[in-house]
Length: 443
Image 1 (cartoon, rainbow, N blue to C red):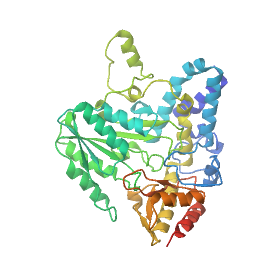
Image 2 (image 1 turned 90 degrees about the horizontal axis):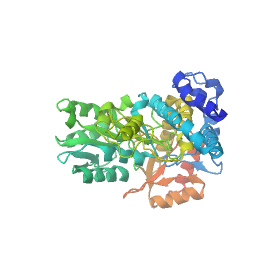
Image 3 (image 1 turned 90 degrees about the vertical axis):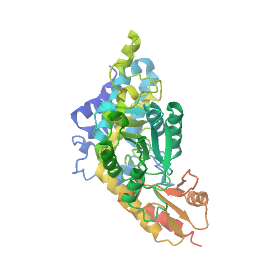
Image 4 (image 1 turned 30 degrees about the vertical axis):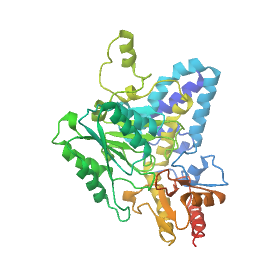
């Protein structure tokens, strides 16, 4: 067995099984014997230390991790180790490592969300995950998918295509007339009042990439459960969630959210390998879908093919994991991303991200020429901060900031806004610099 393989298995599957996920992060050995979410974090595990793990250029203030993130050192190192081993002996390394390392990635994701590894499917992105779920739903022509007018293109297009395939219908409801002063209760009522006897799926986004609004998923799930109490299994409302902009930000597990499917890419707030993502499903969720792409890691599917029979058993995370040849070195480095995040501390990451976003929102709200689009409460927001500047288009504001080496983005919606997305890579001093530059745009 190659040395690289022995080391990597020790860092992934063995570390996860032993509960010592901190050991696989590789950058803070003092935490190697801790378990995930331990409150007593080593003193040298400071935000400066976390920041130092990224190879980000110091010439810029980076506030765009919501789009695509830099890899921290343990993820970079794992990718490089796999790449070298694959280049040296591609076939042997692939055959020896693919299944155990994919299983280690599923175990890491499962531990992070407090679900069984069998309930995790691996994907390439949020877009792939959303598409696989909605395309795989067992819908009938008399059923409907309920979504919102504020959802993103990917959800809208995925449910449209699912409806064309199955004959089901799609209906959209607006979450609000104005985001100013919006409350969790108002959001819940808009959704619940729109549910009809035909509603089979509620397709939502946890944190909206346009305004940064975070939906109260647990409250929505609880109300849907009341509706489901009077329905048979084939008519129960399934709650399916694009969760990417809360994944790696909020300190929650799947049961806290109450959804049947949670879908997210790992290369944004989680700082995972580019081209990786997950689907986390409940038993009720998995029973409601069929795979779209053949799996390479589900043994029952292979055995059924060999024997010329239908695959036995229900849909699972392994069965929903698309097969094919891909950027394996990235996929196999996914456990290091979860380990890095867990070692930093889910609670601490959530608090730090909200702290920086709150500082930014407070500063923007004090500017008379700025219209803040993101709710200021932590209950209804995460790390995305969206706003408009009077007299300037969002693109013009982004250009102004980029000229001053501040990386922002524009929301790709019919009504665009400027977006700044602070995370644990950033500092309060950087937020202060950004606020000064935006204040300078006052007419």
